[in-house]
Figure 1: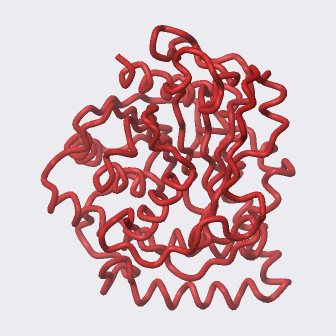
Figure 2: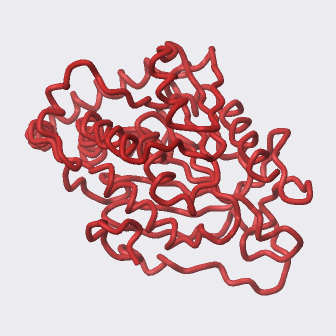
Amino acid sequence: MPAFEHEAAAGRRGEGSGAVGRRWQHTGRQHTAQQYTARQGHWARRAGVTARRLPAPGAPHPPGARLAGGHPPSAQAGPDAPGPGASRVPTLVLLAGAGLGSAFWEPVLTHLPGWHVLIDRQGRLGTRCSGLPSLDVQAAVLARLLEDLGVADGAPTILVAHSMAAFEAELLARRRPDLVDGIVLVDPSLALRPALVPPLAVGAVGGRAPLAGLALGAVRRLLAVPAAHRVVATLVRAGMRRQVSRPQALDAPAWADTWSARALTGGAAESLAYSAQQEDLLRVRSQDRLAVQVPTVLLQAPPYASRRRLAAAEQAFGRLVVRRVPRSGHLMAQDAPRQVARAVCEVLDLVLR
């Protein structure tokens, strides 16, 4: 059964490695946190999008994170581990913004409870960008990946979405509420219909925008030239460094793939699809006429959103709490990982009440 009734063919499960789709086998023994982190996580790939389900590293969690019965979450209690409350260990699905991979979340992971599902979109981990990402197909692929990983197993699932990934998180919550129990929006893009249609959104229908498609073709050809690729990578890195208070964090080895030609092409495709995806989401909102009814925390970095944008967000999310993070840049997972983790635990507490 497709994730959405109109989902396009989204690739096949287990594409790319013999390790794909293998669950950890429970032997009846209690595993230590070290044993869990030493094992390879369960992962799947569809349509060039890769999802990896990994246990928490076993680091201390922020105050407030509790499972059913009041027990703090632990890396020792995975879905296959024995013991009371194991089936209630939460899963956190982490969606980075345009041009960013799962490395974006690394500073946050040690502060988060439960299982972590890290998403890397087209252009990363050896995949290629096939074109402009349609919001509808993007959310449908995510739904199928979560099914592949067994996320819909009765335990709470929280979406943690940064920047433009907020569009995907909201659409998934609307189309597949069975997969979403709570949402944390990390300095998100807030959908609001502009007074004038942006040039790249002209003619946008169902995620297709002709002018944006032409622009992506030009970017792809440009990045195929090694000298041009080096210049673009330098400019993109400089732009990202201005969005974080600790620019040296972006020089870590985990970020190396971000500056590859494939990843830059994928990031360009996502950015060029912004206007079309926003228009598609606004169209869905007008058709649904209902707000998303799961606990939602929205974290804002300066400059803060306008009242008009926040009002639109409050209409879209019926249980929205807005919090400001004044000392953070747009790449909040790098600047304020503990604040992000606290927001996740706040949503978890609301879900588990």
